[in-house]
Length: 284
Image (cartoon, rainbow, N blue to C red; front, side, top):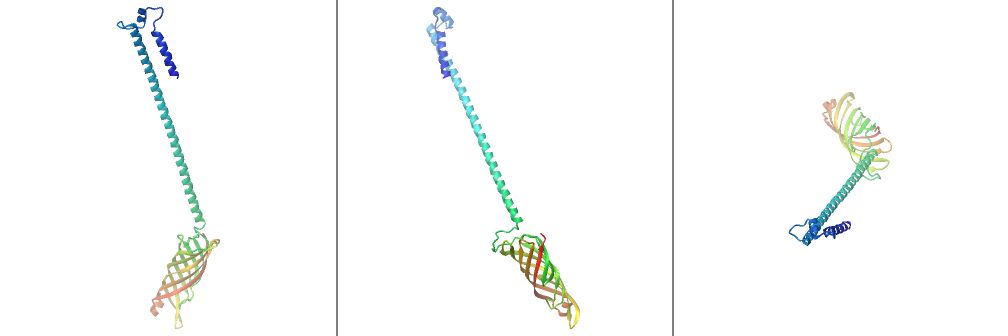
């Protein structure tokens, strides 16, 4: 509106300037308006009015073009601002999603550590399931065949090394003798999984060495030794609240005999079955 009003006022002033004054003659008006010598006064005034209107239209067009340019720049600025806000919003959303993922990962790690610290066992309540040890090294006594010291060391959640030193007390037709053995035990399942204890079943394979004395026709002092293959089967009452376990095992053995007994009787191999019961204290 201001532009239109300014244009009208300028047109009125321009028309007043082109009109001849009352105090001047037509020749003086012709000269003031700088008309061409070959044109009449009226034609000169008409030409000057047309030239003035054309200049006004050009000025208005230039102003409109400037306003349109400013509007386009304003639109671009608004779009850039919106793009910046959208980008910041996406960045904030990505950071929030990353924080949630990190929180989930930390929660999973804490749950896994809690399961390991709590014994690494799942789903108590008396069901049959895979066994996962919550102890590492135990040492105790073993009675039967053989009798002596026994130790057990878990090298994984279900695998352990078992070893012992002791004696066989006339279990066979040989005499007493020192006994050494070492087994690898695998615990495939737990027969009972309760809050107070686990009842894992185990099976293994190992070797033993033992020596012995024997008598022949009331003459004693003969000796011999054997290296044997052991196949232990057993169960273990593995207590969860105290560092103890009790085990019962049956061990078929195949011995390869040498020494005086073999030389005298030509008895090279011997098969037997050992039975023992033990108690262990777990240090960790």
